Length: 94
Image: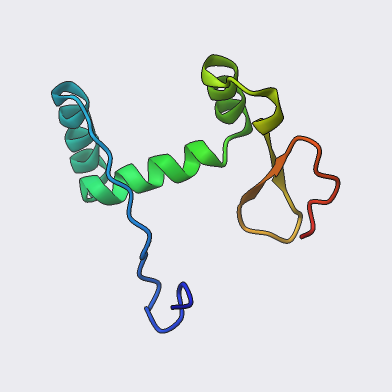
């Protein structure tokens, strides 16, 4: 199946996230204040964090084990979102 084709913008990639009770409560309260469903808000938060170069850098500094697998977030001028370039890759256009 081609992602997005004939789906009306429906997201088809699912990721299960387990939250502690306190973070689940925070997510629900924030979702109510933003007039969003908790799952939609969690997806939005994940997308924003994955596109935030500082957040990606902090996570890799804290948890990254192998220098070879570090990623560099790259925003192309004509692209709506960020792509990741692996260390050692020379082209961001592929």
